[in-house]
Image (cartoon, rainbow over all chains, first blue to last red; front, top):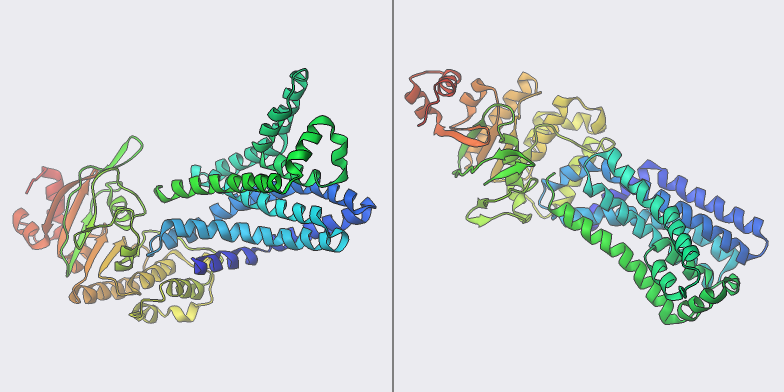
Amino acid sequence: MNKIIKYVLLDIVKSRIIIAYTVFLLLLSIGLFNLGGSPDKGILSLLNLVLLTVPLISIVFATTHFYNSYEFIELLVAQPINRKKIFMSEYLGVALSLSAAFIVGVGIPVIIFSSGLTGFYLVLTGVFITFIFVAMAFLASVITRDKAKGIGIALLLWFYFALIYDGIVLFILYAFGDYPLEYATLAMTALNPIDLGRIIVLLNLDVSALMGYTGALYKSIFGSVWGIAAAFGLLLLWALIPVMSSRRIFSRRDL
Amino acid sequence: MHKSYGKLQVLRDVSVEFGTGKVVSVIGPNGAGKTTMSKCILGMVLPDSGDILIDGQSVLKKYAYRSQIGYMPQIGKYPENMKIRQVIEMIRDIRKKEKDVDEELIGLYALEEIYDKRMGALSGGTKQKVSAALAFMFNPPILILDEPTAGLDPIAAEILKAKILKEKKRGKLILITSHIMSEIEEVADEVLCLVDGSIKFYESIVELKAHTQEDRLSRAVAKIMNEGYHP
């Protein structure tokens, strides 16, 4: 499997998009840390931008990469290699290279400007988000053979998790504002990996004091080691479920 | 086996057994299921029902058996930005354990001279040469060649035919799908004819000619097709 990952990585590095992505993240992070004044403010604005752009770039890059490597995959399936291995190599190759770009582009500035637990959580969340959205991209790509349709599904997924979902949550909070919704919001957070990531980082910043009663509840849950572990466990599930289901679909599909 | 793509039935109860040391030619009109049958054997397409046995062992959902099959696709698709050298070295790297490497076709087709050309810049015929070289490279006991000479120039086609006959003598099973009757007559021993996904006939060329009292394979096949002959 390592051998196939090697060839996938070679192919990705050759396309140079990943280098452009690293540079983009580097400039974004350094810029925001220099603008913000305090490192906490820098982390906060970086968090919001990272949670918008990283899923988008991951999902679009992974979907196009999958369709573009169709020939490569076809070449390998006629060889004595397990199809699942081919699929996992593609997945890990894409997810690892995007994560490496993220660690370099965001991790290094974070260490320079604000080393601390919050910064660490931000980088870890970004890596998880990358793995999750690459997994979703692969799921979209194995569902349909049509490249345009696949990218469409991938973009819809991003649109849903990054924008629409929050709208729905806000609407529910507004409509049922008279009821105690603390646990309901907690459950709703768990159903969106982007929100989950945002909460993990936010609660380790001072701004969480401004979030009222629900914020206090969140703080009591995510403030503990167990809460953080559970949140990252949920993120892991968010990556594993789409990967496993798309791997299953891929291994049973006609090529 | 049985296979359908949605409503379209591509293979209907195809049941056949091939022996070693033979060249079997699979013929039939376009869309008769020839390529689907080869892809089923390779595990690229999964049959809806039925089984595929190699040496008495089922190969469905397995992968290691593919080291025994060399496959030359009808249209070779390769990563466009890889060079010929990289493709060949990659496959060799992935199958490093196999020591028995046959590079005869790489030499005969002089592929080494164009090793640094990108796959995307190659003509269809040159891609076919690469496919052929890869199919024969690991000395597999079974070869599946899907329209191997379509797109090859006459000299390259001759080289391939000579190679097929040579490998046959070494006791290999070679399945060829083709439309060119004169070529089949040259290399094949038996003919399997598929029409609409089921077997129309499966006979040796000698028997076929005797039955139809024709001395050319193309006429014999045409006669059977027209008269609805059942052996």
